[in-house]
Length: 393
Ligand code: FDA
Image 1: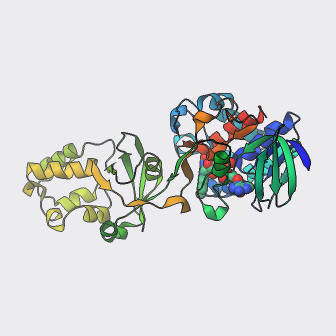
Image 2: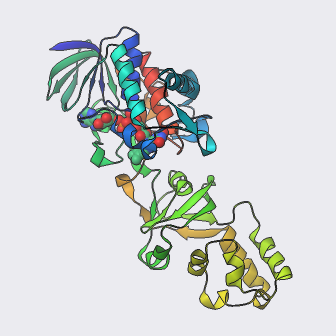
Image 3: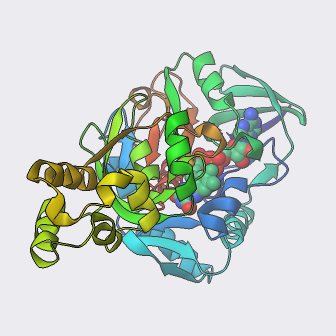
């Protein structure tokens, strides 16, 4: 049985970052992954350009049972540290809205960078390797795999979440956590589009492809101002993906279709200036006509503004500034970008990611109960938690 100082299960974002960090510290590191390629989620991320971090990363942009948990790792390895690494490897990048940083060329550059770092740090990587069993020994862990048996002093679980099962996502990390007595908090699809109820589908499906600016508010008051996209199946776009992290099944969301504007004031002004203009024409200056026609009754749209009573105008304004809708559900793990929930952070050290009650066992990245907003935050958590463990193993 070959012994390594550190074995990392999962050659994704967190696993590779942790491996390079530990390797540079002189640790003998082996990374195991059941996939045929390392970093597959990185490759498809950010539409193929990988939104690898964000200029401004703050703890409140992460959802975690213990909101303080992320602070230490994020402060120790900041987005500026990752940007510096990217620049050292000569990868060109650009900034988009809200401080999001993307590769100019391809997400492949990030995987190549991580693999190069691992190579320089002397890390060994075995792909297409199924871990069949893990057991605790006196001095560490022993693993039986489809590629031989190994032992290690430190074992790092970096198997990610459940999203995109066709890319090889498995619940293995959660099972291992439970095997060692750690609590796994219930998991759910996050950063995921919403789906219509049957009746909503009939009404709104023809709007597929329409995108509008919006502010969406969840029942807990969390709010995002970004684009809203109508799809065949339901609602998507950045605002919807963000709010899905804060949504519970059955809850209504409130959509403001005129963000930053007072719809009633706008309607009253239009009434003053163009009293004979139809409601349809008035609203079509503010929103796509097809959306206006799906939202409001034909008979009402054909009325002139001066034919609408005050109560009617108030109701219209309410529907524009605070459209309350209960969606059927989400598209689930098939299209989700992240998994909410996971290994309970109360059972891990926030400095090292080590399990409090199982010395030598570490959890990093998405397998933990830490999920970030859309915008490069999930990768930043993979880098920061990976480095935290890499410095400790
Ligand atoms: P990750 O999923 O990267 O890696 C887990 C690894 O473990 C994989 O290599 C897998 O094969 C391996 N594994 C799983 N089970 C195993 C088993 N039983 N045995 C051995 N190995 C096993 N985030 C962001 O910040 N910016 C972005 O642009 C995007 N874009 C994006 C697009 C899409 C379509 C998705 C699905 C996700 C994103 N994300 C993102 C989220 C981001 O990809 C995600 O948060 C990180 O990849 C998490 O890193 P991990 O290393 O924890 O898991």
